[in-house]
Image (cartoon, rainbow, N blue to C red; front, top):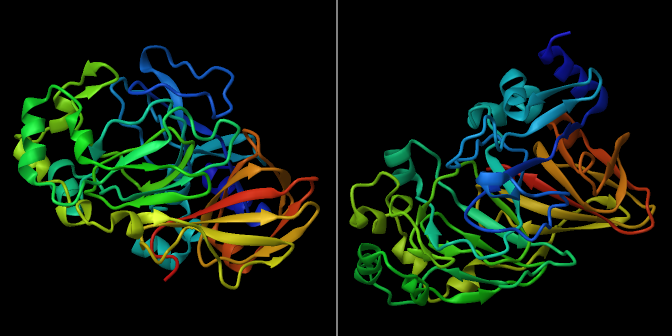
Length: 378
């Protein structure tokens, strides 16, 4: 039996696909070993400090590893694996639904990460749509954060420099980029405290430096970035990380969305506090939006909590990824638990829209995150 037929059989018989956990190494920053790995060391490539969920994006690292960042689906009926990306190519209508697959080029369209950073990421910017395509032939990278509950949730520096103080001018940033000798750009950016169970929405074009809270990050499918902070962890970074192939510093400054980045109401507009889901699931549970579709059409996400030994019936408008964060149970007849190999799933379109049962088989609350691509909810 070929992979396409095996995949079809897995979807039709089980209705749910199990994904292997995917870890990505970074050499920019250390981790705090909050991803559940026995050994996060990746040698000269740094540490495994990111977990990518339902990913069709290859990591852009200095030392390349084939398929790093790409998620794999476990075809349990035949004991084989296949890249999630290839599943979407083989059976796009069954995976995503005919309309979604057609309008989104057979792509899920979103990448979710768990970030375990032990030191804030350097201040950087993700290009907007026009610039990302013009310079790198890549998607833009709008993103949002949700700060997870964990015994070491906040880390040593639970603050993020986001956007810029109102009145900041292009010449101020340009001068610091040309000088490229310090981290004074952080003086231009207010720092906000990171609270567990809250988050931020970061439009493309807004400079930011995420702090050390354990973070569930959802974003457009892209790995495009430009570093704007010269001094980082006591060293001067290569200017190539700022230019990324652009001709000069002036071009880099033009990547910034100045209207949004200097908005005096940035915190009020882009700080995320979860909201209840109207007409939520039926049964013994509750649901909240952690990434509300009212903010952006490019992604959204929910947290589902099911009472001990309770059951909930879920019906959604689209296929989605699932991360089991706490507890144990079943989705349909598939065992789930907050442990590697049992905690990451993809719910194909037929199962999502027809509905599926989530059962908590444990004595504690079952906590699940549902992650959706673009244009799913109004």
